[in-house]
Image (cartoon, helix red, strand yellow):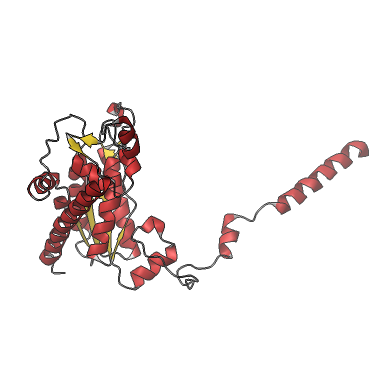
Length: 287
């Protein structure tokens, strides 16, 4: 009998010893963690408007110092011809979000909603990913509610893709009604999506008369020039130069310096239009 009992007892002892070496339960670990709500920031803060690129302490201190505005930006993943990445609108938003937030002041930008609404079962184009309209609106609703809970009192939603407009308007209207008794303003800024005006500005001010249908590629000079301010790789600049394809709709994107300057002026044009719309919303709300 003892020959069989001793090995079993020894195995139990080893198992108990092994358990003692395992990490403490999560709640026990959390009990010993610092409270980041009051922990003094030990390093200098960075100059950045993107929430996901800031530490929690940096966001906390910006809120305490009066940063009360947040932008929710929506883009998409779609077919954009042979030169632009599927994330065209998201790359534009990286540039435009930075410009608008800095010009507006006291503003941070939430992570970009990079997937647009549509029918996921019909998203058969390679690289084309869709959220259902219900999911898209739920994401916007939850993001806005999260920002409100943290202390942001002005939340503006804007999108770079036409298919996003209906859902953004619906969520902004819904939450505006639900939060009527709170000191929080939420609004969709449709004036940001102003590509018709951009095309006119490009023709009348920059002297570039572009027919977006010329090559039929869902690609434009004005889009390319803006994206190049994020990263020229997203318009496959070097590959196009190597292949002798450095143009779009009959307009050369060389020299690079000229295209970047056009992009800078288009960014400024769109920023000004968006700021004017935001200021109109603030004035109407008495803020």
